[in-house]
Length: 182
Image (cartoon, rainbow, N blue to C red; front, top):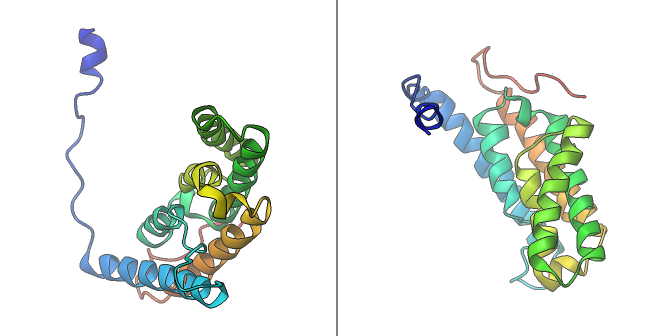
């Protein structure tokens, strides 16, 4: 037990705060990405209360692609593929297990992680995208596999376009996007 607990002891100090310019670029990118997705959702929705395009996992994607654009999880392949594959997994799980929320939720997330590993598209918010397909309620579930196309693919592509624009506007040579495409 002592060995186990000793593994949790911090080995390094917390890294310093990022430069102010990086914080500003992260803020600009995340604001524009979420704003554009929400605006498009409002334009395409049937009523003003429907914000289907704005799924929670896009908030986590914003942290990655605008706050850590050089990270492996942030690259276009991971962003788009991770969301789309996870959406397909989540919808499939819901179709086969519609009445057991606990089992369906667990399978959707774990299978989406395995799928992202196999396809080399690991993007942590993808787990939430799969979970939303299962727990998102009748409005999301009625979309079936369309959920993977819209809002998921469309939203991920909007965020990608904003990331390409904002992350390459900085004069800092260490801030660019992407590191790789596919």
